[in-house]
Length: 268
Image 1 (cartoon, helix red, strand yellow):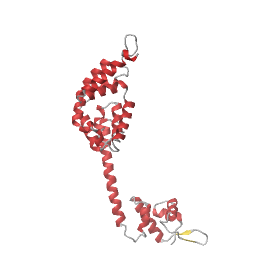
Image 2: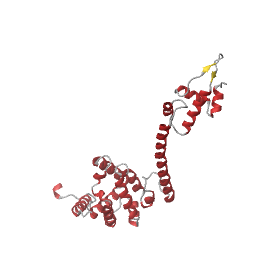
Image 3: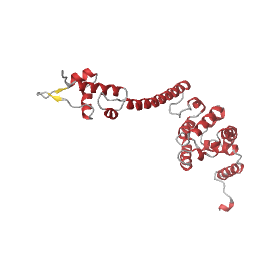
Image 4: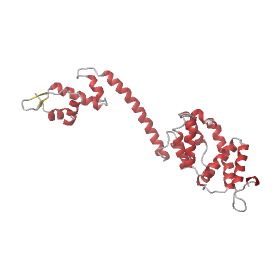
């Protein structure tokens, strides 16, 4: 009994295109041809094609199938390797499913780093973007500390006011918000000690981290918001001299009665 290409493919539960591809990559030997030029596939071809189809169905790459040889060879080693690879894949998919469940439960943005779905509601849009950037700058231990810190500090009216703060807000408002924000920032610095020296937790070095984070902050927050956060940082760390220097710099920039910035008499 001999089969044509289409008969062989049908019998093996595959396609003519697949059979031709297996010929092309050297997985399946070319059969003899009849005098009319048609191929004559034998039982050995059918057995090899069934082996190829079954191993491919199990996920064995074609390159590895080629190393298994004929249907009478023992594929145990390749199967063991495949099983180990699938175990890793299954574990990864289970973690993904668990994370998707959290995303659906908390209705959080899917793009947030793993573990941050349950705290997404405590973050402004800008904060969420910053967390995404942090995940590419700081290591897993830093991100876990940050997640716990966010979880322990529920969002307040002060956070809402900071998020809505316009860039032209008055100085009194900026001072007030800085003072109100400082206690929460102090607690965050206490819970995530690496924030005092973030260079110790970077993935690509402190210089790259500082450049990336500084660029992100300037793009995600307006000048008034940045000043409030800077004020809160100075207050929470007890940097009174730097806070006084900030106030002096703002005094120097403030316009006088004529509407012009203040300058000393020495400025001429």
